[in-house]
Image (cartoon, rainbow, N blue to C red; front, side, top):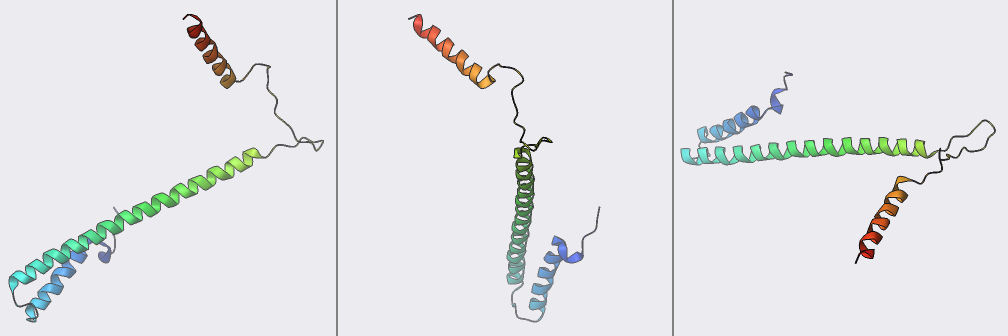
Length: 123
């Protein structure tokens, strides 16, 4: 496991919050011990919330950037595939079907139409 710098850990920030309010209490800026404890709890919760939201934003940014990179690569490949090859004589090569059969789409539509006509003719 790779160690992170101290300022990037949640323990560091929670400790900083505790030290700040303890210092305020020791200097008599905060008069009541309950007030100090309440402020530590509230600010710790706020720091925790900011860290969670920041972490979620980082994850969202990484996801969006990776998806945009994948999309750019896909678009680039599509453009390369759309370019028609040129034979040595300088004319573009067009693809021809290897047989005279219809495409699957056409055949499935034709089958559906024939099945529907059989159902209606029996009535």
